Amino acid sequence: MLPEYYEFICPVKILSGLKALSNLPYELTLLGAKRPLIVTDKGVVRAGLLKLVMEAFSESDIEPGIVFDETPPDSGSAVVNKVAKLFKDNKCDSFVAVGGGSVIDTAKCANMIVVEGTNDLMKFQGVDRLEKDMKPFVVIPTTAGTGSEVTSAAVIYDEASHTKMAFTSSKLFPKAAILDPRMTMTMPAKISAATGMDALTHAAEAYYCLAKNPVSDGFAIAAIRLIFENLLTTVKEPKNKEARLAMLNASLLAGAAFSNSLVGVVHGIAHATGGVARVPHGVANSILLPFGMENNFKKVGPIIGELAPFMGMPPTGKPMKDAENAVAAVRKLGKQLKDASGLPTKLSEAGVTKEQLPEIAKAAINDGSCTINPEEITYEVALDILKKAF
Ligand SMILES: NC(=O)c1ccc[n+]([C@@H]2O[C@H](COP(=O)([O-])OP(=O)(O)OC[C@H]3O[C@@H](n4cnc5c(N)ncnc54)[C@H](O)[C@@H]3O)[C@@H](O)[C@H]2O)c1
Ligand SMILES: [Fe+2]
Picture 1 (cartoon, rainbow, N blue to C red):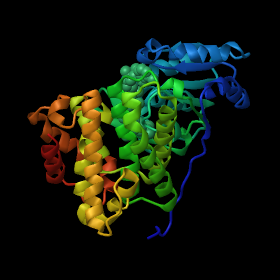
Picture 2 (cartoon, rainbow, N blue to C red; picture 1 turned 60 degrees about the vertical axis):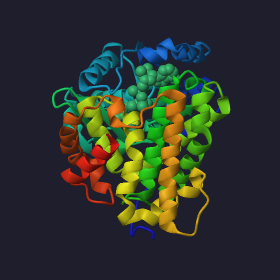
Picture 3 (cartoon, rainbow, N blue to C red; picture 1 turned 120 degrees about the vertical axis):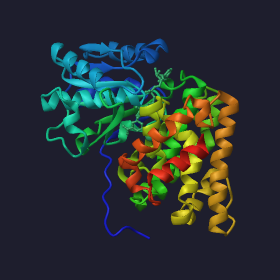
Picture 4 (cartoon, helix red, strand yellow; picture 1 turned 180 degrees about the vertical axis):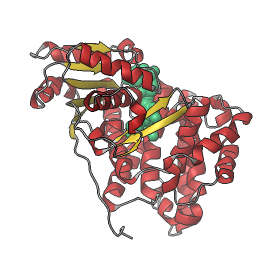
């Protein structure tokens, strides 16, 4: 059934292909930018990826104003303020993010702070609080991934409250996303697995949660098919260019889907698990996804069942059987990724303690993602999911 009304927005130019990165200086020129601040992290630099970016600039008139490579995983507000200050001190005019979600979201939030002329990031927490247009902003994802290169969201850790804060605004969309498989080939197996499962969670939750619409459904299904066909290959054959490019595309498609249709209880609890127990976002999602799907069987079982054929499970003609098959396919992929990369399938294997579960459940019910989940998420329901996933 179509929603009575919906909107869909994805205003990001997409450049996808081997060596697509060489177009970066031209894209910046089109945006009127001459002196970008490059945001990245140590892992990306160690993998030799900054070098590829610098090589792309060497054949152009554009020279980066400064490189910031100290973004930590699940970056926080202090780092964002530091990046914003570097932007001003070095007279930069644009942002280029080279990294995973932590880097991309740090660049998004620093951009927000620069244009809004403040250092109080938390003022903009929530939905549509931004008034000014962002500085030119190009993203080169090195994980596949968060899809943050095409989302209107940023997630930042608040050191004061130990929670992950979400910022959403149509102003947060980057201007261009460059998908180059050379940028993800260096990802360690476990990070490839975890970030790929984050993308799968975006696509699945966008498809069966309450804000679904036919356009995001199309994006979600295309993403799920690509993930089931390519994620395991990227983990087993890290240098496989075709599979890497397919996963970058899957991540982007899933990002565009959930940026419009939002996510559900899996993300709600994953954010809380990240905040309380510092479990990486993709790891938490991967563990929780089968339980989150089962949690929604009563309300949207047949819709979940529609996903089975794109997960390699032929339709049976029985919607609830298809829903069970979809969950079984997700569990099987999780198990294969565990065997190939050590990706945990239980919270206890990811460093969470039993004593932390109530605190995580409490934080989860205050997370905006839970409001769009078909099944109502009370403290008891969240705790039940956590116990099952423990
Ligand atoms: N804004 C959004 O729409 C959105 C969506 C989902 C998640 N997120 C956020 O994104 C963050 C997670 O991002 P992530 O999962 O991409 O991981 P990440 O950015 O935290 O990176 C994880 C690690 O992988 C390393 N790495 C990244 N790319 C590499 C490469 N190609 N080669 C070698 N090492 C590499 C990094 O150095 C880092 O140590 C979380 O904070 C999450 O909340 C945001
Ligand atoms: Fe996510």
